[in-house]
Image (cartoon, rainbow, N blue to C red):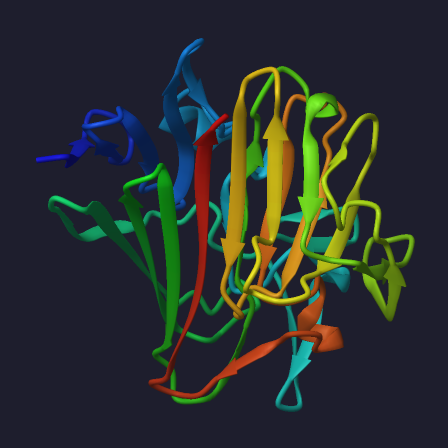
Length: 315
């Protein structure tokens, strides 16, 4: 069968390998955090993993908050001003991880997801990971189920669909996103980059949206990234074109990132080491629980889905 799945239970949490046997393309997924730790292809120059991941599950468990590599962002994305928000006339304060004064990157980045289902056939292989959130002590007293389905299919394409189901008795605010770092070559300075955007959100000194937008057309067409530094949120123009294309001519690899309409924002961050670049599909703007930019409200028993895909092309 062209596609297969292997589950390794020897580490702290299960590690899932989705594989295209015909091309040797693999996606390595940790049930810890439901994070994508590797997405690798065979090239003329050897095997190349385009994800800046961890050395082991133990490494991820210990160091996930150092850079939030491949972290699932839920129930809020990026920064929340002072970790505080109001919803339906009640005030809440997040009780988890802070960077300076701001709570960041949600509550599920270290959640122990369970493997609910998996299967493979002639066309693809998938795994479904689930987690039930019901922690009323973290400043988000809204119980919900989150399902993450990874599907590897032909053409080196990895599709990721996230579904949240409100399991409470009241409506709940929700944001969703991912925090993967991509490494196509030795340095991101060599990347050619294109974003499906000509507009950024304006940030204040705390990297929180002001409510204004800024025109930025630099990467609306493919450009050499060079020494560009970004820690910005781009507004995508539509879902018909790829949200982002990364190309490294030296490694002869290209990555196309596509997103459905539920992910209208793209947060981009360049770490100081410049070996990889964070490209984050987001359902809302940072601090959306306060500014309501893109905030999703889910009613009791209702569900809401978000989907993105990564496709590697050998040049």
